[in-house]
Image 1: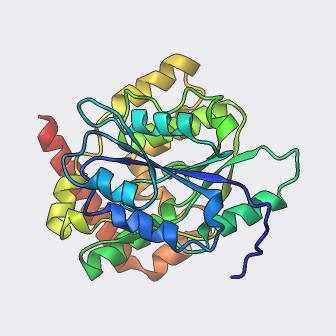
Image 2 (image 1 turned 90 degrees about the vertical axis):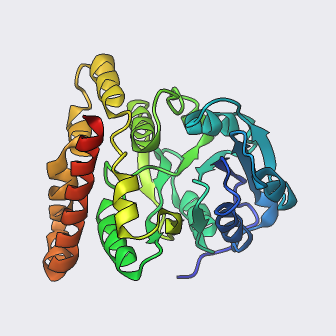
Amino acid sequence: MRYQQNKNHPLISIIIPTRNSEKVIPFCFKGIKQQNYPKDKIEVIVVDNESSDNTIAYCKKNGAITLTVRGVPPLVCQQRNLGAKKAKADYLLFLDHDMELSPNLLLNFANKIEELNQDSNIKAWFIPERIVTSSNLLTKIRNFEREFYNCTVVDAVRIIDKKTFFKTGQYDPSLSGGPADWDLDIQLKDVGCEFGTISEPLFHHEERLGGLTNYIKKKSDWTGGLEIYKLKWKKLHKGKYNHIINKQLGLSYRAFTVFFENGKWKKTIRNPHLFLSVILIKSMMLFLSKLKAK
C-alpha cells in the first residue's frame, strides 16, 4: 500500500519504558530507523528503571533522549507518564521495549490524521500486532489468536493525542501489564475519545519467552492487578463500564466469543486446529495461575 509524503506531517514522540533491555531494545530502534517518515519529525524518549546493563548507553548512542525512574519494578506506568510529560510532540506513541514498527507505520498514521475532519473525536489509535516467537508453531498459534484481539476491548491503544492523554488521569501506577492498558482505554472513553485503527502492523518480539512450555509458565502470571482494576471502575462509576470489564476479565469472551463475533467465526471454522491450540494453551495458563494463587 502506498502512502503520501507530506512536509506537514506531525511530530511524533515515541516513548519506550526500559529495564535491562539491552537484548531486545535493538528491535525498537531498528523499526524506528527504517521508518519511511521524516527523521526530524520523530522524537524518541527512553525512560529507564535503573538498568544494570548497557541499555542507557545503547539508547544514547542511537539518538534517544534518556530519563530515569528509580524504584522497585514494575514501574512502567510511571515511566510512560514521565515520558509523556517530557514529550514535545502533539502525538504520543507508547512502545514496549520489544516492539518493532513496520516501515510505513508512522506514514500510515500521518495520512490518517490528514483524512480526519476538524470535528473528529478520534484521538487514539490501535495498531495491529504480529507476534514473533522462538518457535514456528507457537508463532503461528499466537498470530492466529492475536488477529482476533486486534482493535477489541482486550487490545490497547498505542498512539494518543497528547492533549487528550492529559485529560485523563494518565497511566495508573497501581496497575501493570494488561490492566494498565485497559484502564487507560476506559479513561479515554470517559473523556469522550473515540478510537481509530492503523493499517500497518508492529512486530512484538517474544523470542525471550522461549518455547511453548516456558511461554505458558511465564504467561500464567497475567492475572496480577486485575482485582484492583475491577474494583477501581466499580467504585468510580458504579458499573458504567462493567460490560467492557466483564469481557476483558471473563474467560467466555477471551476464549470463545472474540473468535466468533462480527463474522470472525468464518476464520475460526477454517482453522479449527489453531483455535483448539489457543484454547488448550489458555486452559493450561489458567490452571497454572490458580495453582500459584493457592
